[in-house]
Length: 106
Image (cartoon, rainbow, N blue to C red; front, side, top):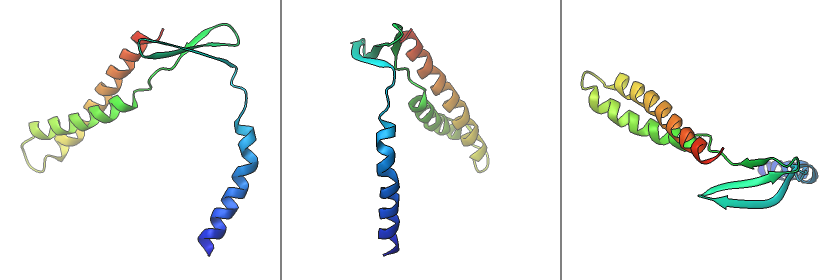
């Protein structure tokens, strides 16, 4: 019963806020896709595009770096190699993905 009352209270708070979330973003609705990149024109006449923030590269690079670091560090518990490899791989993967996105979206 407590869970149902909590869900009802949360829903009653969220419903009045829904129209406020549907605000004008200042962008026209004409989108153009070129080379897999989404471009659109703002109300100010400037063109904008969606850029990647590097999250996927961070995750994939971290996982790959952890595996490589674990394989390289063969002494003891291998935790140090795994952690250092994950950190280095995450930074490298994020940087690679962001640079690829900058080349596509200028």
